[in-house]
Length: 287
Image (cartoon, rainbow, N blue to C red; front, side, top):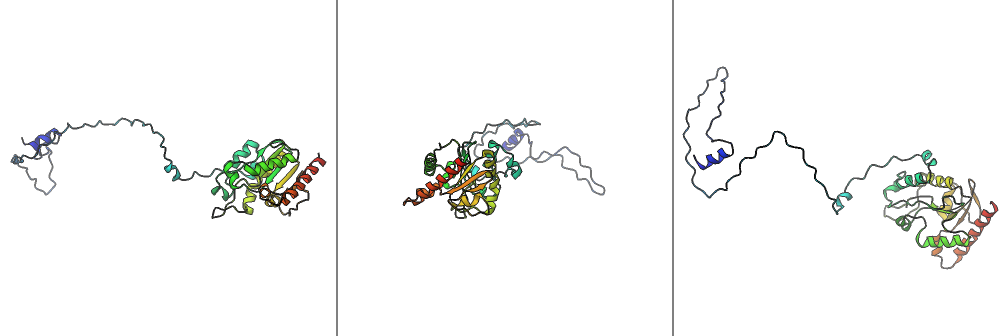
């Protein structure tokens, strides 16, 4: 037997010239051809370079066992995550649902809010902080980049200045005072620069502020900056030195701490002090 025949026989294939032992019934009208009884054995192949001995054939089982789970270790690279599609937005709460929330529910709703398009550009939300039973409420318009990065309303240098303003009013920061924004996200234009909020953005965020106000039951509100003074009472032009009313709370407007930090003449600080004196006197008179 030739070398090729031996290899084929070892693999379970059999000689190339061996015919299948099947009987094919000729179709009607056809003549059955009879295969020759014996075929001439092929010429032996010429000797070539030695061929490595082949391993015996592998017999596969009728049914393969279930694959064994393989433990996957976390890859330090997060490139795949950057390209992953964003998860579907959470169901948005209604104004009525916001009006029934407690403090913890309100903070959770603000953190995942998508009631306006600011959720597409923000790096984080900025919720209020302070005494949740405070009689005093300090309100700015919308967060700055620093506040967004810190996740705290009026933090950094402007926060230190605000603390000094409160101490001048005989108030202790963090006690009987709550600090927040009308908007919880930072408005940006297409170039990534800060801008004024749109009417739609202000309206979408308004229920959160109104719920903060209802939970606090604050008696005196001090607005910080022109935008906060204009936005807190819709349709009413803010005037410094005048006491306005929002529900049961008195509203007094003053300058934003960030503007006061840029005041080199001291004139804005003097006017701000007059505003704070007006707020303090009004609060005492309504005690």
